[in-house]
Image 1 (cartoon, rainbow over the protein chains, first blue to last red):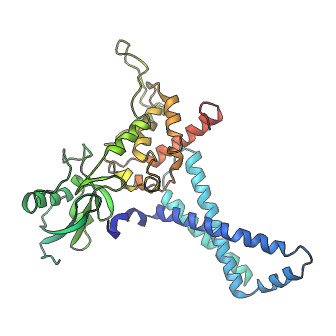
Image 2 (cartoon, rainbow over the protein chains, first blue to last red):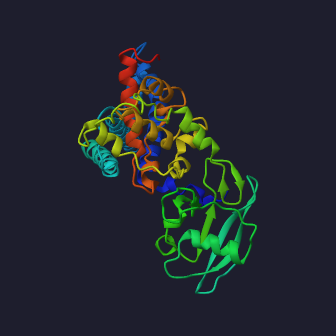
Image 3 (cartoon, chains in turn blue, orange):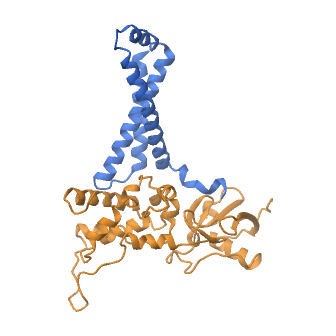
Length: 116
Length: 243
């Protein structure tokens, strides 16, 4: 069928679900790298020290801000779903999802503000 | 294909699964519904066009189609309210096999109502006095909130969980199961909870709320499914259903 057959995927709550899924995949991809870096501490801290110095580069710090955004977004999105599934229904889910995105952006912004 | 100011270009799905969109020019009129467009094409341009409708007043649920990418009840959808530009694209409901043109095969949809135990299981016979159900009881309020479904299949067509798992029972069947679960007169809940908690049951729902967004009767199947998730978890924890 044509490209116009998936109109429901333009709705805010569908996009919220997409962002929740993508942030989860990104965090899952980050986690092994995180453990790999922690593993650098084994057998002397020289390599870890080198990595930590590199992590002070502005671009790496900016990426850390992105990580904070993804983590907060995934956490709040997950809490919203747990609320839906385990407590009596609450309306206004679009607003709640939007609030979660705004809080995540604010968390990343303040994190970067502290870093720079 | 261009269209005159008082005309609309309407692309209709023609053929079966391997069909294609074909464009028609239809005169624009005041208070015209999407179903009016389709009917005009069948009456004046191509009598072989197949589509389904019955009541024309939003009761029977038979005229649902995909209109510009969204499932809608065409008899109650005014063209003027959804038109962007001079073109509309109308296809059969998604997530269902295509019989021909705009007629989708609803059999998988209704088979799932059966699989979800969406049939009332009476706990009394006709020889007993009618059950007294207080309208303000919590159970009745929960059932009432979900009971006005007209079986149009719009929620089913809008559901990506159905798209990703063709065996998933879907929002309408689960919504029906939820109304019966809250019906104090029904005695089939043990079997119903088992039916809706299986691998193709309520736990497939990703809570996208597309069903609620598109339901023409303003029902919220996502809320019903969330209720089923809670009830099945409770039943599992108390040993009434197996894992």
